Length: 97
Image 1 (cartoon, rainbow, N blue to C red):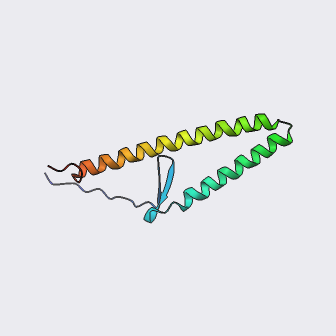
Image 2: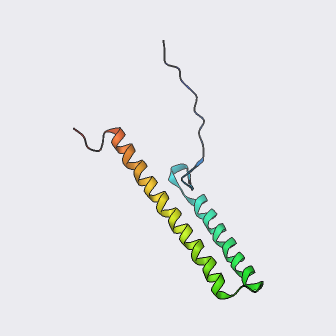
């Protein structure tokens, strides 16, 4: 029985662990997305202030949003490190006999 070949369609970008990576490992789209998210959050904070939310409560919202973002970044970093180590191990380039 012969090997069957599948045609693979190329993609110009892929989202891995929340990070958009383009051809040639460019992260321009991801950076633009993150800038857009930051702009939206600044707009939200200004709206909350304009609606009368105190600075203390706005700081609380910012604090928990920051904690959430940092926690997410740590999880992604750990998962990426694990994936790279696993790939190297599977390729036999790490811990060779």
